[in-house]
Image (cartoon, rainbow, N blue to C red):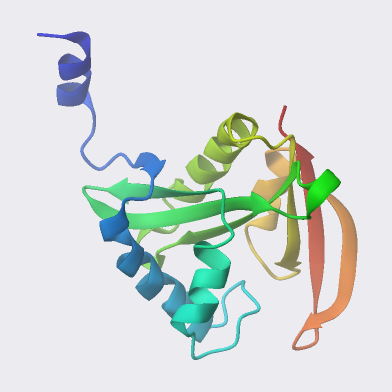
Length: 170
């Protein structure tokens, strides 16, 4: 038995698999993002979410979309894309989403850790989050993993402040 086959047998089937999105998962991601926007959780898009707004956020212009799968089910995802054009395109913007059914299981942490490793592989040397709602419970995790607050946008979305975070990833 090969080492890879042995490792697959020993692997906990509920452990998330992290990797690039497959074309057959795009509709699942659209449904997941539609729910997040409808609940007004962490993204500034206004409900109801249209396919055009989804595509502008998750499809183009996006460098890579990475997903977490738990037993074959899309449990979370993130995108990386240039935050700025031209000479500043080495700084990525990233957005994260975890299905409410899979929250509090470490999937967000895994996606963030994957970002730190993967961003340099696709040409970025830093990752910036532009509008992290001040009330977002993930802020503590971002800071624990090395992101630092570099600014605040007062009353950014419906009166709530937003935090701008940045982290080098080289």
